[in-house]
Amino acid sequence: MTHANAELLTLARDISLRAGALIKQRRAEGVEVAQTKSAPEDIVTHADQESEALIRSLLAEARPNDGFFGEESDATSGSSGLTWVVDPIDGTVNYLYGIPAYAVSIAVVEGEPDPNTWSALAAAVYNPAADELFTAAAGAGAFLGERRLQVAAAVQLPLALVGTGFSYNSARRRKQAAVVQGLIEQVRDIRRIGAASLDLCGVAAGRLDAYYEKGLKPWDHAAGALVAQEAGARVQGLNGAAASNALTIAAEPGLFEQLAPVLDGLNVLDA
Image 1 (tube, one colour):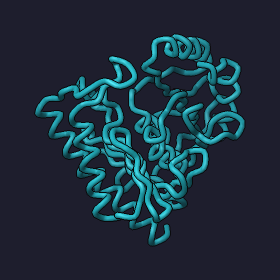
Image 2 (tube, rainbow, N blue to C red):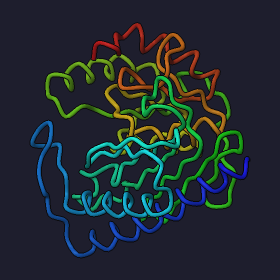
Image 3 (cartoon, rainbow, N blue to C red):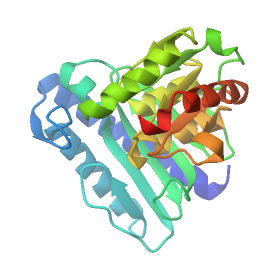
């Protein structure tokens, strides 16, 4: 790991822990919905806003020349060529209900904040409910705490445990359910955890064999994708495309080659 990436990783880790402590405290105090976004089910809590404000201020203090691209506030460009891509609470509905599968997700990328072109340098995903910190830096491996992560050994598709997620839009959900209906008879089982960053880290940790989802925003997958890649997963869309809003698939490379054409045949890009 380069010295520069080590510094970026330390900053991502430390800030994710501080934001995680904040949202854990707010969860204990009681969660209030601040507003809805794309649909009534798509919520923002006051804790989302407070967490992002904290992360943004700490990053601005430490690295004032970097850009910022978060879920809950306006994006700003910087002069350094680096941008921090942040989800202050990934899995907000889980957070609202007290389901312990939510996380602070922080990545720093080089280039424009576009997953089709950026190069991720460092990432941290922290689940304060489980006190689990996933980290990765480009070329330096992925870790859960101090334990180095490695994707699960290759399996045939019928033995694969596959994670996914769904849109807040009801019409899209029906199409996504049709993909699941076609896939579930071809795999061991399906899991829907409700936080893309943790799904991707789950692939890195061997808790899932594979994960796919359409409709992810950059902040949903920026950090988790680097963790999964550094643990040995292939993280892409179909036909060599970058992981993006169009489709994100993460799996051990051999399993990826089995899963991708099945998803393509189920018209996952149209779901």
